[in-house]
Length: 243
Image (tube, rainbow, N blue to C red):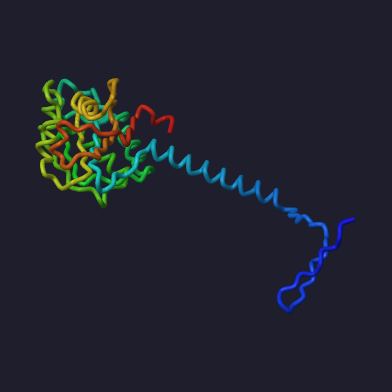
């Protein structure tokens, strides 16, 4: 049998030793359920953030102040009626083209994509109609800048040489705008997209499509002659029935 420890003296004060007693375990009857509840809350939160992130990556997001952003809109589908009495420049959209442009506008509104700072467009009827429908259904009217129409965007689209890249660099030289939209025609729109993206396969741009390309290393628009950007948004009306 072990001896009982003596009293310990601290100066003139006698302090009795504490009695020996077994240590009692503290019980928390709700610890396990609380822990699992916290784990479940964290998991649900992470899942929600992941879904938001995937949606953001899919739909794109507004460029920040250090980024140059180019939005390229190809005109929507064109009516082939009255081709004998109507020039190509005057061809209007058909019902399919109107549906394509409306869908693009609605998707821009749904994704909260802001309007561009300035807009350059071919002066053809089909590009005008496409832009009007997209802007209206994106609800950009109150913030939409004046559109600069020019036949050059029509002519350059079919010249088979340089397309839009050099002309765009000249037009935007020393421009203060960060978000620029060009509304034009294939093959020039398709060519420009593939010139500006670091890709190994050719990207097709169907009628009515809108692509946003962002540049984070450019100092001014003049550098777009040699710049390579990243795709931030691709709205392809071919997919409109599935969304």
